[in-house]
Image 1 (cartoon, rainbow, N blue to C red):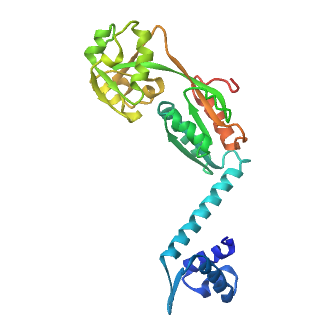
Image 2 (cartoon, rainbow, N blue to C red):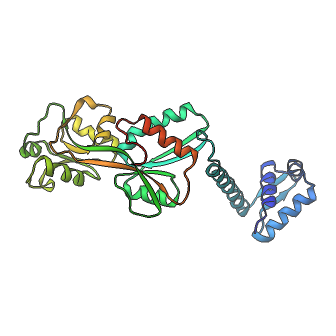
Image 3 (tube, rainbow, N blue to C red):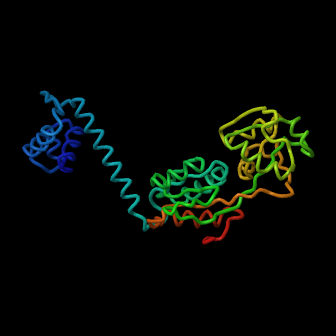
Amino acid sequence: MLHPHWLETFVALAETGSFTRAADKRSLTQAAVSQHVRQLEQALGPLLIRRPRGIELTPAGHALLGYCAEMEQAGHRLQCWLSDTEPTRGELTLITPGSIGLALYPLLLDLQAAHPGLRVRHRFGPDSEVLESVLSRSAELGLMTYRPEDARLAASAFVEEPLELVLPRGAVADCWEDLVALGFIDHPDGQAMATRLLSRHFPGNPGVGGLPQHGYVNQIGLILEPVARGLGFTVLPRYARQAFAQAEAVRATECAVPVMDTLWFVHRAEWSLTARAEHAMAYLRERMPGALAAGL
């Protein structure tokens, strides 16, 4: 096992380039610095070349220095996880689907701007990635479009989001033939979303697979670009349309029987949430239009 004191001495030696200066920095004797380096080299092989005007790290020495940096970062992350008593300091990790993420991210930036000690790490991902990230604890909080059945996860309803049939401004979709004339702009969830919504909007329709496809986009913020240019229609969750920069160039049609998805906050059930995560959840519930009451 590599003793932490040996590693701290090696980092000081690499940073100062001198046994004398490393000894001063660590409040040790030069003999102690040499002994620490010798213990490391017995375990790992030659770590440095001693020259008249200083030292030079070997490849193994550079590798060990990188390892020390990773250990320091891991220790910092551990402190962030453990320092959960301050709701507005430390790192908040969150992963969400793209549509709701577009709506939440500006709110999270507002929260961070109000509390400089808070660091927000927000990733976009599909439900499968949200599930994996929360289970592996690479993200403390996630949002999913369904309530997971995994007993390791706790879930609470956050907000409802309808699917929308989105057309170019001025286009009509009174019948299936209108959609055929427009063409479909597909995306990673496009076929599934369109099937769910259009089966209610146009009962008995021939199926989404028979629509001419006029484009495919896998970036949530860009899916409506071709729609805005009149190149076709698509089906998306409402928050994606509301976040679109050219919202005036598209329009959503009303569906007599809407398709509504409930979005769920999820986290590991075995461990208490940090104060940061609790605060962020309450903050988002207060500021997100239509958010559901906690505990549902």
